[in-house]
Length: 189
Image (cartoon, helix red, strand yellow):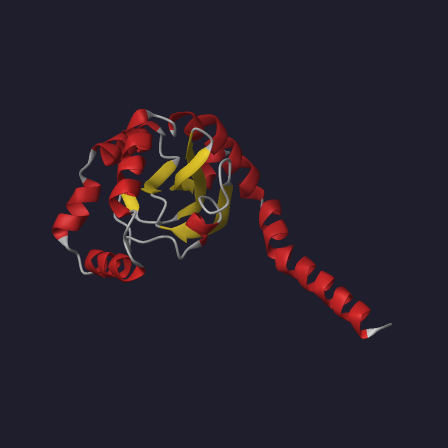
């Protein structure tokens, strides 16, 4: 076998190994039920004008931000800058998300919407940081494009089994942001 052929075989093996966690992830028992719940019960209202307008406005507002400015905003959030937090936690989108969470019968444990820069736009509960673009929830949805859904592993939280389910949000077939939901997988049974 030539060196070129060996390199090709090694590259192919590396590709297979790189996708193995994604394949294993897709086979987790909660993935199918969480995806079905989101597609049936959540995706229909992601095109609501309250959601789309809030993201479009945030995208315009943050369009020219440099990474240093995003980092500064994130640090201000972590430091509990109340004006920054209130601007996101007390807006129309957050009110909309809170109503959807309350109407879910406990299936949705949290929800937060991100813009095209990965910055939170609205949320039901507090998040530990403002900037999500460095995390899989944004990278595997918004960055992938319209129709993308990412179901993360189940984690124990306050005695509940919670999976974060993230979805790209689109307007006119173009991804404009993403949303992440905490889903109580035991409530899906």
